[in-house]
Length: 427
Ligand SMILES: Cc1ncc(COP(=O)(O)O)c(C=O)c1O
Image (cartoon, rainbow, N blue to C red; front, side, top):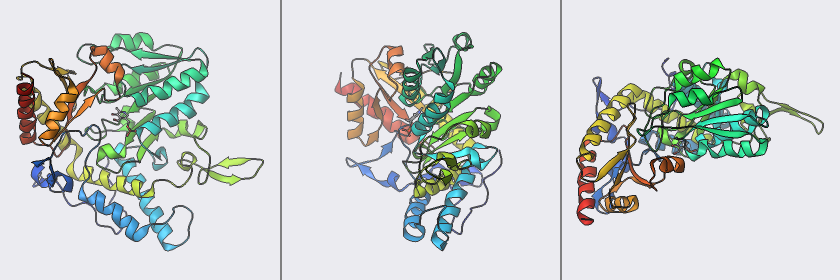
């Protein structure tokens, strides 16, 4: 993958973070995240809810306030200094994201509100134009609701059918079932790269290859992969890829839809309004070129610029170092929690990212979460917006600890001793 272009403005880029002399230094990295210094209920915060949202480094926080303090202006329209400057920053961020995903061109990078909006955009444009009565949309049994409901809505409107690739007891896709389901009726495959509820990494390259054999495009939901794995959309050859800014250490309310230019070009626009047009009369509107055709109205300018900064930050640490660190943490944590009596890990795929979902015999996950919270430990409990996964495993909910680059073994130890305390309370 090509490296990110040099910082595109005079603003200082993120410091060389988290690495000193080529060594991944988690303590140095933690110092960049101010929230990690705070206490919760009188105890040091142990933040293990990263699959829901990640914390923000100082560089991103500074970028947001600097934008509003010194550069705020609307983009693409003004000839004045601030507008030009804001436009340059926003478009520079788009380029940084292009490089991050290794997209062929910056025009294939569409700013959206998040992974959810990216999927809805594809369902409402590509989907509505290409899916008809009797056609099928293929998703997996481990999807987040964001990658189920937009397709369900489309299928309902078009009298099409949502088909589901089942998963095994470890939380892995059953490949033979996928092969059987992929047929002449399939119009699109929409599958998550990484499951937020189980941590499973899906073989998306293989899925794309198989789908392309029968000329079916693939949307990859990268909400849980972009923060943790190297993503190269050209190597994956996926047709669409979405992710959310807030999970990659950037702001909320901003995310990315990547699409192959040929597909995006052929798709109708999503929303109408300013910026997405090249000319308007009451008789006819000519739409703008990519990517603006899909970016109606004033966008989340600060968010886009903040996301660019977050991506630079990630690049500064190095995604392969992050991957290694989080894999080690997951192994360490999995071994440790398996020694707790009555605890069962849900999601034991051979290929996983740092998501540790579990249940404890006789204890509701919400109680686990509440007792841990009293000790300053933030985890998530519930169905994780993946109710079909819970149904598959015959449970109402799980407790989920999810790791980020700044988590440590000491925090895993705190989790484990917190869980032992939970056991004691319910003994
Ligand atoms: C796998 C997956 N897809 C999609 C989403 C939706 O992301 P957002 O709410 O940021 O749009 C999430 C959020 O948790 C997720 O984990």
